[in-house]
Amino acid sequence: MYKLLIVDDEPLVQVGIKSMLDWASLNIEIIGTAANGEAALKIIEDQMPDIVITDIKMPILSGLELVRICRERFGSLPAFLILTSFEDFAMAKQAISYQVTDYLVKLELDAAMLGESIRKAIQLVDETKTPAEREPVFSPAGLLQERFFIRLVNNLFENEEEFKLQKEELSISFSDDGCLAGYFLIDTPAETTMDSTQLLNLYSAALHMFIQLIAKYMTCYVTPLDARHFLIVFPLQTSADDSWKEEILRALDGTSTMLKNYYNASIRAGLGHPVKNPFELSGSFYAAKQALTEACEETPFLFYDELKDTATSKNVFNLAIFKDDIRAAYEEMNQEKLRGIFASITELFSQHASHYLQAMDAAGSILYLTISLLSDGEQIVSDIFADEPAGYRSLYQLGTTEQILSWMQTLCDGLCDFFVSEKDDYKNHVVTNVKAYINQNLDQKLTLNEVAAAFGISPTYLSTLFGKYSDLGFVTYVNHARITAAKEMLRESNDKIYEIAEKLGFESAFYFSKVFKKIEGCSPREYIQKL
Image (cartoon, rainbow, N blue to C red; front, side, top):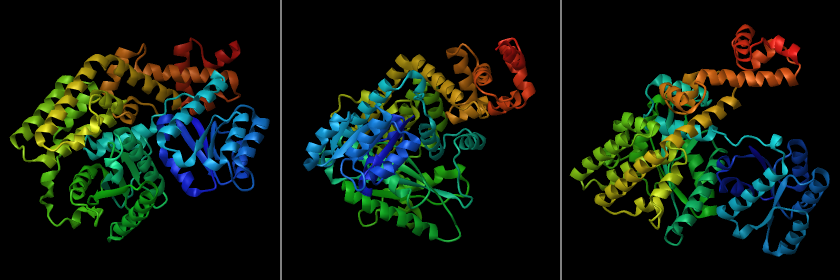
């Protein structure tokens, strides 16, 4: 993972850059921020980031001086991106002489421009570092957490045991006092003047700023659903009274004010009822979706128990009734089961064409499940609707139930074509990612059940994939990966055999030696003697 440092004396600029891109998807970790060049230099000396985004004018030590010193001390890395104002353009030219990767004018900076500069910086880092210095690209934690919450609020876990296994694997904790789900919508008056790409960039930047800001108020889990909707799971500190309501509203009011000032974007939210057992969160999410239909400019954040008319449930579609078929269709890339799901939904709404809002909710639910549960889901869906000026977001421009059903049929046909053409490559990609996960977690307990839970698939299905798309079965692969690491540790370290066994997750030194001898033909001690 690439390390990024942000340096600017304006806190709002720091927050804006943090929230402008999905850094995890770029395999980038933001290691910190600094308000001047002197503080930044100390961080660079301690942690040596790969990329630094710095303002050109700052107190104590300017960005220009920071680049010069780093070039003298460290050579070509880190890669520098310089933030400038129009009046600093002459200084920006001087920065180029210090081999900065790019310079960015603050008032013109948007997600697309920043993303392009970051890609240049990553390319420079890759070209400068030796292969041994580069880290593997695969980093599944963020994506797996999103999939976990998508499955949870849509009641797609097979049972509570599977839910608990995956929760522990991903280190997700819930309050003993319970939790509730919130269903959020991003709005902006710019929708009428921007094209679909500009809108997507705006929504993405606004969401990431929202995530950064709300974390300052409270602990919660935010999961994007589609271009405009996202989910928040709020762990509650107390359920004895309604004080948790005040805490949530205070956080949302403060965050939404900043979002309005920075992006002229507003948010609306429906907030469900609290549940003691997080496994039952789907009920709270269903209630939150109902509440969102009544949220408005005067009451942008509405709790379900404040609804005047619970008949609004007519406008919300409960996807959970299709949960078994949905799980199988996406897990197995099974086009027959997928067509069955869409046929059932189409038949339901064809008989009740007046239920426009419910049909829109059904289509939206299918959309964000597709984007979230399929690897590269957003790209797949974008390709399916490539001929539409607004892409897949054309869904939100449709005015009748018939148009929505036609949109869903296009999605279904496109997914089925993709399943047929890419099934083997996709499944092989799953095995590749699981192998990468195993190699990065050799010190952890790597049972078939727990790794399958971490990836949101069934143990039986994962075992089948390894049987078809790997030379080694799951257990054999884990053992080979651990023994490969053990051999390197025996060569490079002074650790004792029992210490290596413990570090690599073996239950005992005896079992480690047994596995080692089975794979290598000699014991660890005999291997050391050969060396």
